[in-house]
Every structure is written in structure tokens, then in C-alpha cells.
Length: 116
View: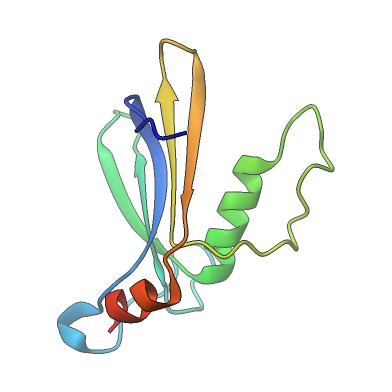
């Protein structure tokens, strides 16, 4: 599938590529409040405006697993499953009345260059 989704962004998780000023993060994960975040979480607030937060690896994995969890098939995804990803995006497609999910993994070389 080469088509780029054209719908409205529902949420995305993007692996952070730099730290503030090259120093250690002065933030903690907004979900667990314990771990330094490695993902930027973009979503929409109640008024439909973009909102950003930061999640650690574990909370990002949980967010991904919760979305993949199918109501009609509760054992479809185990919360203990770990998915190696760098960018996960969900768009709402009005013409299909459904959501489109894209998952991106950087190559080891891309990850090394981006996370320097």
C-alpha cells in the first residue's frame, strides 16, 4: 500500500530524535510519571486542537497495544507484546468511516543517524 492517508490525524507516536539542547530530558513520562520519555504523543483535545505529550517506551507500547486490541477479538493482542517501531500514526478516513494505521521502523543506520 503506497497511498498516504489523507484523513484527519487521530493520534501519533514519534520516537524523539533529539533532546532539548542536547542535554538530558527534564521531563518524565506523562502516563507513568516515572521514566524519561522517548516518544512524542500527538493527539486531539476535546476541542479538536492538536495536543502533545511525551511517553516512555513502556507507555507507548501500551498505547499501541490498546489501539490494536479489537473489541470483537479481545485476545488479538497481548499487552506483553513488544513492537519495534519509530513512528505509529492513526488517521480517521471519513470516506471509509474507518481508521488507517501506519507503522514505520527506521533501519539501524537511520536510527543511529536520527538519534545522534
